[in-house]
Image (cartoon, rainbow, N blue to C red; front, side):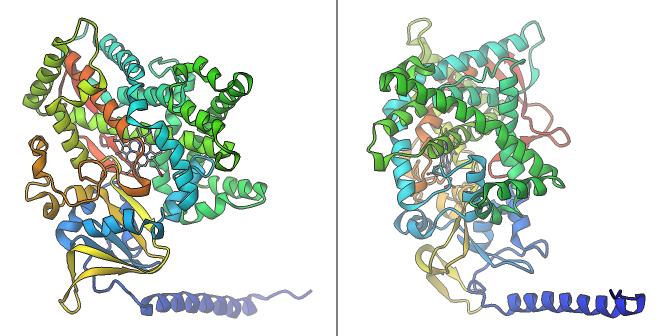
Length: 555
Ligand code: HEM
């Protein structure tokens, strides 16, 4: 056997290093001379050699997003770094209409998000599929979320909100007014318990401080998306990874990746904590159906009125070829719980921290709610129609949803070259000429700026960045041009992927507020809350983690 001597080693290493350098340089050269189809479109300069990705996903990125239409226009080029390709950031109403509705077949969810939600929900639910399969699954979801079905959930919403009220009252009892409370903690318990009971017919005992079931599930569901946003470098590979066969190889790869990476390890543990709960619930529903048919669901928690029981029953009654498989139903249980939890807890926390700082608005809302309650018999609650018709509450909720959309952007991938029309022409940075259509090339990553479109001054007027609920009191003023399914804002998106839970969400928001604003008053604390960007927004006090403190007094 021959061995390399010290002297012979150094030319080998030198040659290897030289070859690596040549390969890197060739890849960089290929990248730099590659056609840049969006070079004429204005856009922000990336803050690092990695390109736009770090700026887009940074926890402090909200202002970066909001600034894009104001500074660069409603189509902006996001410049790639040393590797990767340029992307587009779109807030243009006509382009959004084309991407989300008219030509939506060519703009599926990005592989990154489809893969991420496929991993989180352990299967191909609505968040991970497209085309026919997506339409088939949405039929079941949409049928569970009709306004009439959601209105039947009102008593469950009240039951949970009363638990919140008792818990908060007990925490304040015997203490001076204006106690500092982390309202986000109370609200995550409330939203999880509402989506648990009304969504999947299951209680997490969320207001019991000793509930291990709550601690485990709550810890998992509230951490999984913030953890996922730290894994964005591996997101492009998640979809291929989850489809990898044999399964043992997939599992082995996940274990290897998790060892040196704490965020990946915690992410894996969170997914593994949630899935068994869905399996247990689904199996118990299936067993009930097998033993007693559809009628047996009425004996389960929530009297069979919860969303998932409705969906399981419809699936049970469907023709064989229209049925969803067990894995798909399980993945959709995850989609519903996830969709209904974090979006609403952070939104409600933001609402209360805003009215805490605006005493006049808080008084007016309380007076409107008290006035409506005074017309009811003692102990009788406002029903969903009465809650819907309170003009000030409605205007404030709409304005909050416009200004503070809980999901700040979504991410699409282009499947073929597509031409889309523009409401606001692009002025070329090269020729100065204007164009009112945009060719989006196959494979382009397209970011749809929900928060940025909702605050564009071109769309909403010069006061777009101001919180003005009165803009909703005169609906005629709101011809936003945006294709948003709710009041012309993009908060719940539109088209095939429009949020199916929007009626549920608005009822829950109004109902929880109708109880809290009448029974408690809120004032701000001195600690500024920082709203961190992830896939959703989360409230943080610097150095103290996720929380939204407010001063609370029982009335
Ligand atoms: C203020 C509260 C909410 C906001 C702002 C919101 C927003 C959104 C947005 C923007 C999407 C589209 C995501 C994408 O295409 O990538 C979405 C999808 C979804 N939402 Fe919501 N949502 C809210 C509440 C809810 C609730 C309460 C539920 C369930 C009870 C829910 C269930 C879902 C589901 C299942 C999807 C996936 C739909 C699909 O892929 O076809 N959401 N939501």
